[in-house]
Length: 99
Image (cartoon, rainbow, N blue to C red; front, top):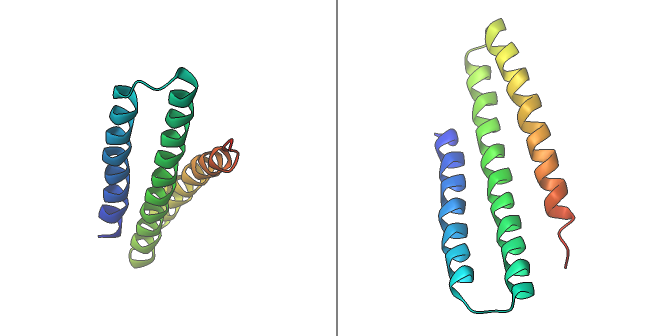
């Protein structure tokens, strides 16, 4: 259930940012304004990705707690490392957003 919430958050973010992107591309703003708007959309999508990954990580942890087998723990540890690295770099990029 929690993994579905994470997938939903990512999907919702993809839909919203796609709509925003299309709106930006359809306007006749100057190129600098479009570039700034695209960057804002990119950072917004990154926040949805990080939140969705956090939900999915929580779901994996809960699943492993309920099924504590050694191979499940190995898989969970690999997933945690990969998702932590992805989340770290996404968050770092979001935090460095130019104003």
